[in-house]
Structures are given as structure tokens and as C-alpha cells.
Length: 205
Image 1 (cartoon, helix red, strand yellow):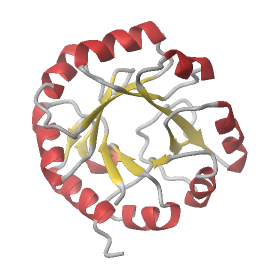
Image 2 (cartoon, rainbow, N blue to C red; image 1 turned 90 degrees about the vertical axis):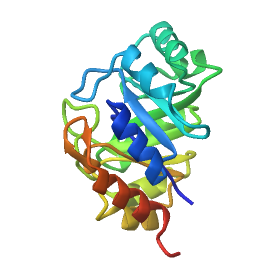
Image 3 (cartoon, rainbow, N blue to C red; image 1 turned 30 degrees about the horizontal axis):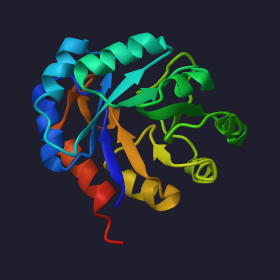
């Protein structure tokens, strides 16, 4: 069964609702974003998460020392690198589970995946000047090809309406959604989260 990460969590209520509906992981953004949280806010939410729900710290071109400091303070063991990080950054984060995000325009963008050795690759849509959370989808056939490089987490433009088809085509390890389940930036919709998780996990196949 595909795993589901709800990203851009900013408050306890949204976190609890996501957990209640069956989310496997919650993403906390520590980069410039309308969904950005402080390490104190994240820690307050993470301390109340039940066992087996994984908090993920999302960073963009942040120094490794700063990443470690935030994660250790909050109790985060999975790091998502969403910028132009060097492969050595992943090596320097040994001891953490690492996810390296790539923004995909076309098949040529897949070549750089071979330079990195994270635990999983997250594939997002390319929008000039925006690192993530755009709500735009990309060609899922390209994401399917990316499975040749390692474990794939599919992101970018996913919604309750299209996630079943996305999972059918790509067969990813997990799907990641933020704006597709929001009523406003940083505020999750209970109904959209419920429908997204249900359609991702329970597809009848």
C-alpha cells in the first residue's frame, strides 16, 4: 500500500486530522514559504504525534549544521532537501533518513538523480523561481522512469481527484501533497485530506 505524506503542516489540529485519516508522515517546512514553521512550533506538534507517524523536516539550501540543529531540537529523523544541495550534503547527514527532491520538466532532468544516494527521491513539478508547493502536475510517465534510480515519492499537483491515477501509472513508494488538500495556504481541509488519503491507499486493486 502506498504511503502518504501530508506536507506543510502548521498547526496541531491539521496534524491530528491527517493522522486520524491515515497519513504516514507529516512535513514541516523550515524554508521560506507561506507554510513555514518555527522549530518551536514544529516541536510542539511533533511531541504529540503517535508512534509510527514520521515527521519530516523540509529544507531548501540550508547548512547541514543548521539542519541537524533543528531536527535534533524537534525530534525529526527524516530530512527532505528541496533545493540545489550538493550530493555531499546527503553524505554529511548520515544518521538521518534523507529524501532529495527534484523539480522535473522533462526526461533530461532525470540524469542528475544518479549523482545522489538518498533513501528516496521526491519528484515535484518545475515552476521557475518556486521550489515547491506549486499545485502543478508534470508528466507522470517520466516519474515512472525515475524508479530506475531508486525509491520514488511522487509530488506536484496531486489532488483527491487525480491521485488514484497517479499511483496507478507511477507505482511510487509514497505520494506527497500540500496545496492539493488546502482550503488556504498553510490551512488543510479536513474533507480533502480524508478523500486524498482514501483514494491514494484504497484503490480497489
